[in-house]
Length: 375
Image (cartoon, rainbow, N blue to C red; front, side, top):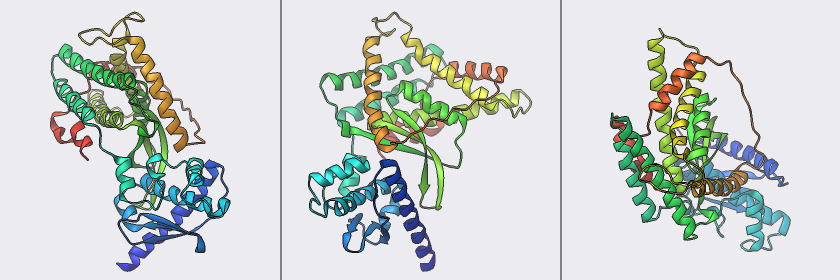
């Protein structure tokens, strides 16, 4: 057993050295590759020892947190290494250290002075203001109404939920209740080496309508010593909660609808990409309906918000989120793909998408927004 523990710790240390090289490349920084030690202790999560050029990372941290959190702690210690190598340890906890954190892309929640401790994790994970929690509970109740078999009732509930999210964000701007350090990110761990087209399509849809920026990335899993692909959501925490819920709902729903389509077409295996593309196009059509009114008018129904204001809100949100995207992925590249369209599958998928309204699935009441809020 002890040998197995030592073996996995060696794997973690080697991975962190690879991460060190990768961070230096992407941030255009030259730092000597350090010795990496995996150490005991639950409170002190990491520390830099200049005398022997060692970054020590807590075993407890790795075992109990996703790898992206481990990397934030690791980058904090790299910032101390930067101060040692470039400032001769003259500014360990001053402006020089802050500059080093900026250069290495350390999230503000982890850029505090001193060794990272549990309060750094708490600052990043944070708790939402009561007003935001109340909003999300109201949204979840509306999503429950979206289960109605009456399509007009389901559409009205979905529209009201969207209205509440838009209004909340507009109110925050009016009160100047915004802060760049409020922007967070969330990896949607898939445990897969390759992301499906439907996952990428949903991310693109979320970016357009749910106040988040989205990318796909490779992330290490310390439990399996393997790297996997994952979607990454970037935005304010309340936006991340809703976007993650919508992502999982659409992923689950699209899978079920595709299986239904296959049964009706005698086990058809081809056309899934076209079906999924049509499905998301139909969902997108539902969301665009509220913007059909003339420019400068109000959203239809009993939810009156200026369309121009909502569009401006989306633009501002995208600007704020993209700053964090640049911090996380300074050398981000775009990949384009193409496929042969199965027109029948696309049409069928689009028809199903137009009939689908985001709601709380009856069989997964414990997986709703409140569950994500309280994790």
